[in-house]
Image (tube, rainbow, N blue to C red):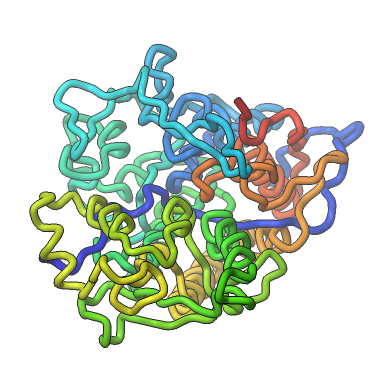
Length: 485
């Protein structure tokens, strides 16, 4: 079979991990709104799922309404901002693509999630393999497209029925091959926000470096830089000002930091015959086929799993959580799940096992014949690839923005501070902790309304500084974190 472990990458595009140190100031008193040297009369936002308002593993009406561009537009109205149109789902189809909700907790405190499958925005002809959503053909100001990469912006047909279904939803029927860059060029903003590029590295990271799907391959720096330059040139062609946001280090987000600490603690607990616990594991790494003696096997020490204090290097993904309790059992459940993600016929499963040298009669996770799947671990080598690309992409974006005298939001630095200490908003602490930290939604990647409002406030502060404006900030505490049942 093909060497793919996934044909689906985490739908997301984009990513964070945070913990903000320091505090946000309380609500401004007696602020006199001013646009400074900026013109907010026609605000356009470009970006990916984070810009669209994606949350909880899906795009739905409530998330759209709490997208950071919509929150920015609300604040811009006090300084001359005009109408801001989003491609909202209707109330009757408010659940959009479907999403995760918190259904409860297990006896040990682990969250139980359920998928919302009613009142979706699917239209005739949609299938599970090819979803098609109710079209929104009016001109829009929010051009956030879940899943889009910087490498996609010149791809003709990316908005066709064979392309990205959430770009197809807003692509004019008369122009099915219109590129994203052409759409941006035609938007003619007076002010813009650009937060693009997260997916050029996130798909690789969330797949644990295990996928060969095009959406899971890290974009080359040359392609990223060239496309970013064209995007910014298009946005500024008519003299518009704006703000450019960089890419965060995704290894700090709950998708990668939630499972490892508790798993490590369990392994270190004394067990019969193992007074010091389980000393180490065997993982698969990368996407190359090969058996127990190939280079796609690695032994890792339990001590090298990153814990809550940051000790250790190996990161376990959120998708590994249901399977780690099978450690040391003779089982193939994890591999059935991995193979199922490929969408290949079930009859091909034995061939898949042979290709990767998997013997499910051996103990899971503690034998080279039945290792922990690569998709469940972002190991230290893969993390280096992620950080190298993130740094190169951010350098390219900062250089272009600086050359254009645009405002720059250092998202990477911001979320690094959040990840190390949290952020206080009017007396309420928010952290990068999964579910309880207020900032991250149930997919462990995208933000909650609270998280998006904090991002909007950070952008406002930078815009005010760059353009001498006085745009009022939001009270982030008015926006919820994860909803409890």
